[in-house]
Image (cartoon, rainbow, N blue to C red; front, top):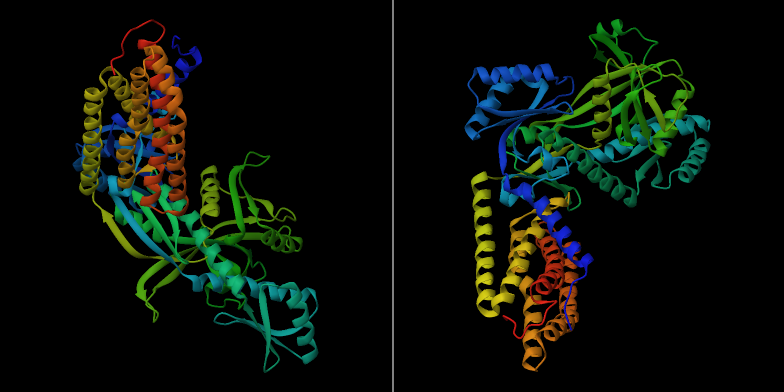
Length: 613
């Protein structure tokens, strides 16, 4: 019996290990200290402006490694942390408040590796350093906003049903509708109950019908507010240039945000605190804005400035940003910039009802930003103040519903900015940072050093033991063990959402020990076969075949345990389970396939009398 590996097994081993090694390669190149520049809401970052920034830095003797400009974002790589700090101050002073300038650590991966998607393995907050925020969603604001929408819906539906009412007023967690007589109240109560299953209606004295959200609806509103904020925060941290931010829900109304590698915590807080929403408003064309400037503002309208001109907008919003599900910039049939909007079904119905009666009239997009006043209310929570700005006014070209276009924009850049705001600004509740922790780069570096030392010491100890105990076959096991480590790093680098944490390093240390278990089983079985008088080739064949089922069973049960840890665990536990599962998969590959290919290549295919085992 001669042991030979088929050509497809040899090619599989070479290709898999080669690909993993290729994608593990970016981890050897390290990172550069860098300054990242991106445009704010009303600014545009051009190549010419970046060139001016470069000249400013050179004039101040800041050593620049290279500058990258792509997707209207510039990355200036410098030689060290001192140059980074100096460059940040100079760029901030030169560009002013219209641009976002942040310090970052940028991978120094060669262009040819980046062209095939090669990126270094992402490091978690405990290894790379960075900031940790715990943010709380203002659920009162979320409920209040939902009640505002309900007020508008009540007025519209009652008018359509020709049920006359005196007033619709919003209170603290409820809406009171006052009617003219008992019969109308009874009819409205029956009508509204059938139309609003998520509201409860109770009669009160004075011909008042009070509407409250059901508990199920309140839970839905709160869950939606948290989910919406998570999406928006992810979009906002992209401005800071974080490679793999962690943004996840914690409890009923809190969000955990971890930004690995961020050195500029002040800028991170500023961007995360700048929560916003959008509203589509009807422009009041019946009243004179100049009269409003002189103090005679109609009761149903509000005065704003747009492009230096006073503009009157109706107080009642047509639809809010919470109804926007997508927005994309483009050009219309005339080559002019536009933004394509998609609303949910409820928002589409509202927009359709409005545009049926307002074709040709102007409609405005109002951008509302909530900023903390740094003052706290009686409940101990921060008080937020809304800053409102009209960012677009365009005429309604025709009747539309859930999908329509916003035109009349000045430039493609304005269209892109508006699309970004529409996608990322549909926040229905302000948030506040209730906890902040900073992990310094020195602590992260120390954690990396300790973790790497643990891996190296464990690896060296296993390598020495295998060579001493199993001789030539121990060398084969050591080659597989090193290949296993390379494959783990390569797979971790290829997975977009995976980040290596300190518990993840513990998982790698564990798999270093576990990776040789399979080879120990195989080699011991080969020794048993040789002791029973089998020939070397028979012993190799029986050793691999007999040990396979045991190896498979042991690794499957451990892999299942890793899956359970990943499914029910959070944070560090997930990091440990990911590296554990990847390590199990790669160790199975290297122990069973790779070592078999090497053993067959060295000792198989010929008659031998002894084996170095």
